[in-house]
Length: 173
Image (tube, rainbow, N blue to C red; front, side, top):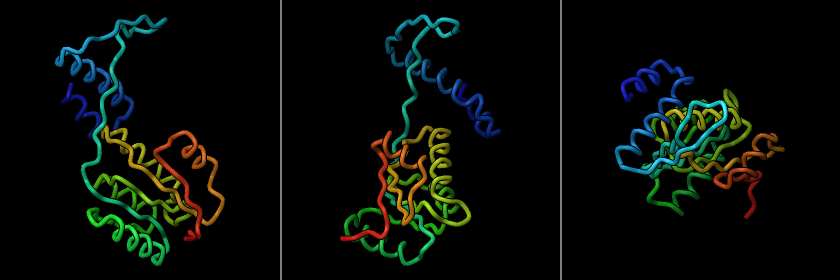
C-alpha cells in the first residue's frame, strides 16, 4: 500500500490519495492493536470507522513573510526576528514564491498579503492547504494581511478555523 501511495503521489493523481491513506490508517491501527469501531453506513462498503491519518507537524522553526512590498517584508522580518530570535525568517515577493518556499520548508507560520501579483494570497492559501493535505502535514497558522477589504473566502476561513487570523494594513501600534 505504501508503494501504491507513493506511485499515486508521484503521478499527482489525487483521486486515489485519500482512499489509500484511509486504508493505511486502518492498517496502522491494526498494527498498533487499536480497537476499530464497527459501523454500518447505509449504502457504503465501509464496515469500520476508519481512523484519520495523523498529520505531521512542522518541525522547522520557520516563519514565511509573503508581501509584494519590500519595505513591508523588511519591517515584518525585523519585528519577528526581534521577538522570535530562535526562528528563521523567509521572504517571498508573491504567492507563487510563498507556495514554492513552503513546499520546501514547511513553515510553522505564514504572514500572507492578500493582494500580490503573480499569485494572490487567497490562491496561495488554497495551494498551501492542498500541499498540506497531499503530504499529511499540519496546516500552518496564516496571518492574512491587506490594506483592502479581504475576499469573503478569506473571512470565512478566519471565522471557521481559529488557526488563522486577519490583520488589516496599515498596522498601527
